[in-house]
Length: 406
Image (cartoon, rainbow, N blue to C red; front, side):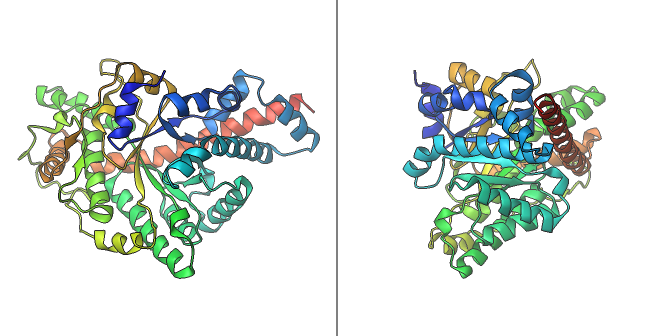
C-alpha cells in the first residue's frame, strides 16, 4: 500500500532516496517496491552496503566464482560488483528518470576515498566508472576535499553527473556549489547538453549533532542542555540559505518545516564568534538563471545521515525538520519505514528571520566552549578516514570471498 505520509513529503517537493543498495534488494524486488509504494526516487550506496551483503548472503556467489576464475584482484572484483549493482539499480529507476525529465531517478555511488587528495587519479576514476556504468541516471559522488571539488568542476564541464560529500560545513558547501556553477559554464561553452547533467551536495546531519551535543553535555547547564540537537538543523538552514542565494533567490522562498528548535535564539551572541560560513551569503542567483535558460539543473542539497542516534529523540525528527522544496533526503530502510508509519509532514515558510535565528544559535555555541569551526574540520577529517576504513573492510571481505572460490 502506498504511504500517505511519503506522498505528502513528495508533494512538499522533497525527493526521497533510499540509503543502501545490494543484490538482494535488486533481485528480490524490494527496491522496485519502494519505488512503487514508498515514493523512492533515488538510491545512494557506498562500500559498507556491499560488505554487509557479502558477509550475510549468497547473492553474489556466481559473480565471485567467475571473478575468481578470472584471477581478479579484490579491487577489480569490488569495482565490478558495485558497477553491476549500480547499473541494475539505474535500470529500475530509469522510468522515474524519464518521467521526471531527468530530474530524479538517480543512483549515487561513492568513489574511492583514497583518491581524495589526488586530482588526476580521482578524475580518471570518475571517467572510468561513468563509462563502465553507462547509464544516464548514474551520479558519482566524490569526496568534498579541495581536490574532489576540482574534480567535480572538471567532470561537470565534461558533461558527467557528479556530486560531493559528505559535507559538514557551510564553508565547504559554498565551494562545492560554486565549483558546480563553474563546471556548468564550461560545459555550456563546450557544447554539452546541460539538461543531462545532475549534481547533489550531500550534507551530513546526525554526525554534527553527535559531536556538538557531546561538548554541550560537558557544560552541564540547563541552557546548554536546551541547545542539544539544534546545531545540525541550524547548519542545514544556513547551507540552504547559500543554496537559495545561488539557485533560487531568497524572496518568497518556502522552506523547512518544524524548525521550532531554532525559535527563541534570536539575539543571542557569542563573544565575538564569527566562524567562516556563518555570515549571510552573497546573492548570485542571476548566474544560475543564465545557465537555466540553456537547461541547467540546480545542484540539489541532499540531507545525508538522517537516522536519529539519540534514542530519546523521535526517530523521524531529521526528516520532519528538513522539509524544503527542491531538496533530497536519504533514508536508511529503518527510517524510511518509520516515516511511512508515523511521520509528520508540515510545510512552512522559511524566512530571513529563520536564517538569522540559525546564525545566532551557531554563534552562541562558543559560550559553552564549542569551537564550531574546529568541530566541523575534525568531522571532515574523520569522515574521510571512516570512508577509507569502510573501503578496506570491503576489500578484505572480497579477498576472503575470492580465496574461498578459487
